[in-house]
Image (cartoon, rainbow, N blue to C red; front, side, top):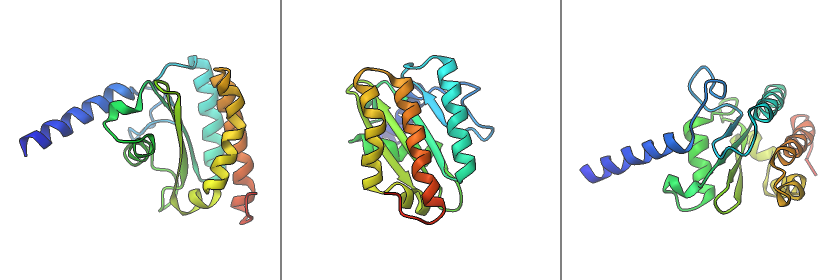
Length: 173
């Protein structure tokens, strides 16, 4: 039992070290902001611009749109990047509405891996697996050239293009 407690405390410490939250990135209730760049791949100006765009989209469509970068997702002790994304969303991001509607784009720099993780009934409607695959096409060309900022901007544009018809109840083809 003591070993489980020690491991739990170690995991919490690692999460705090891997996802440092600056005062400007944290919301008033202690959650992560819309854009958290723990990997340090963006300038502060770029992060802030992306934060403003993501916040605007999130508020307009009542669906949280989040971007988190990390040096290495395996530092969380989770088996896959998908499990890591779920844990980050559940602990630090709460989306909108009763079901926590939102989408998290987690990028791990160690192995250049990523996960798009939708949450809530509306989040999963707007961003089903087919739509998540289409989102990859928006940022993929930029990421192949290490153009993270423009890749994230393209992702945010594509997310809004998916949310517009979804909020009206239309399929997002």
